[in-house]
Amino acid sequence: MIDQGISKQTLQRLPFYLGYLKTLDKVTVETVSATTIAEALNLNQVQVRKDLASVCSLGRPKIGYVTQELICEIEHFLGYDNAESAVIIGAGKLGKALLGYRGFEEYGLNIVAAFDADENVVGTEENGKKIFPMSKLKNLCERMKIHIGIITVPAEYAQRVCDSLVESGILAIWNFAPVHLTVPEHILVQNENMASSLAVLSKHLSQKFSEEAQKIG
Ligand SMILES: NC(=O)c1ccc[n+]([C@@H]2O[C@H](COP(=O)([O-])OP(=O)(O)OC[C@H]3O[C@@H](n4cnc5c(N)ncnc54)[C@H](O)[C@@H]3O)[C@@H](O)[C@H]2O)c1
Image (cartoon, rainbow, N blue to C red):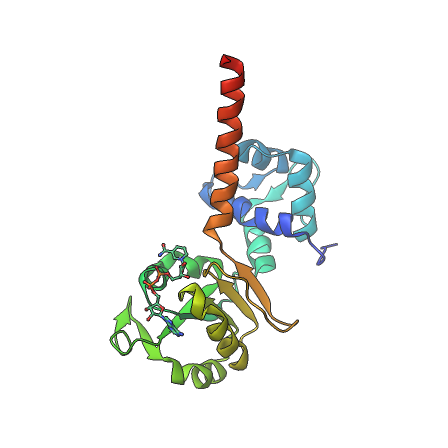
């Protein structure tokens, strides 16, 4: 039985399993066990077994999973086999970098266009993707049934842009601006805040350094 009420932690580990499974040779590695995956990724095997059981019911005792079946099951669970279209708002340094990244398609994300308020940017293309004026946002999103909006504008404009995305029928927002967004209940916001990630790194380092200093002192 596949568990649809999967935890966020399990969800975040699934792409790692998938990345590893895709490195395996299709011909020689026909089957793979949770233990092998756990050892390769340096994870707890009980956790890996539980994670896989929640998305795939095809595991067999002593054999494990047929590698290609497991890849398909995880991709299907994550929706990678059913690409979602997305738009980017803010075609500056970060927006253009994301437009240029070809790897998203592998994760079921198809960035179809970008929008910007700067008329010097509007009308140009990045990686074959057109950059439109904001006035075209609602029409394009409704016409193309776009459900994901990616925000890469400066923090002070992010809420305004977020509101425009919600008005345009977007249901999920990937927010790179370092600001809290207020959205209606049915909208999911995933924040990519580098300051939060760096805070974890620098706290870890400062703890390490103070432990070292205590040892020496
Ligand atoms: N550059 C990075 O490596 C990086 C990394 C992490 C997070 N961020 C965050 O991403 C955001 C963008 O950063 P950047 O470096 O790409 O900035 P940038 O100034 O290069 O680009 C911002 C773009 O947004 C457009 N814009 C501004 N207001 C707009 C509006 N109301 N509607 C539509 N477009 C608008 C601008 O015309 C510009 O093209 C910022 O919030 C930044 O903090 C950037």
